[in-house]
Image (cartoon, rainbow, N blue to C red):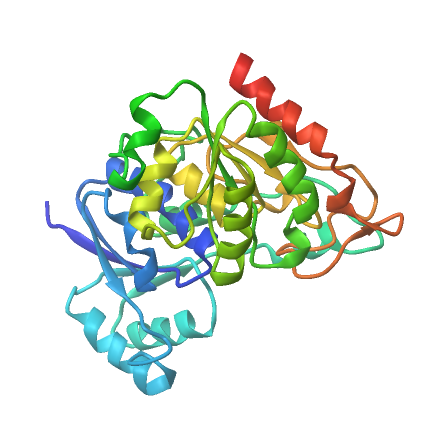
Length: 342
């Protein structure tokens, strides 16, 4: 059977790109006759290195692929794969321009339905319709179904076996207690559990478990470093290993604690269970990590929630940021319950 090629577009954000990986994994397992070319930012290449029949092609939107001229250059690069179809999982201006170039050559195009109207109804202040919307990963799968590649996702975590990065071998050689990853930072500040409350969680958990702190830049590195200095069982990972090694370390965790953020999706990608904290956003919007359980989502019920799909604006519940109403003891007890009883 002739191998057919599908170009897949999903350029950002990190969590959204990570969510495409389990979908493409199952797509390739179900349809071995296709070749996937994943077009995304070079940083995200490690997400896809374990998927058979997949080639990664980097987009550099801030340099060689900037503007119309740059996108046309990318179009000429991608033509070499002789694609027969495009799965646009992003649906932004760049992906639409690229799709336009390919449509003029007769290539079939299908793009994601993001359910914008449903999400507006879920997050509006008045007459809110609080109901679970389709998961984003299922919206991705629908695009391939529309291209005549049926895909019914198995929403279960698949624990990946990956080598422990050499820098962290010592933590596992004489492991006596569970190891927890904590991703306390998020792109939008309103989705972040307040650092004072997070430190209460860390102070308690560090008495019984080894904790690794993930994610962030220089500012977050300093905060995590302060925790590392203050608590003997806390180690900051930030800036010490690259993304591929970070995924390998996450794969060897017993549990991850994160916000509604990329930390949850990285853990999902390697099959690790996540306890997640939700503020202005809500799992009903469809961004729960692949294979994760809604029962592991910590959130409060309030008529104001959710007020945002992406967490880029504050959500006040009775004049208090909603995420602050989640008590550290609730987080601590949930984690201990899962580690002790499953």
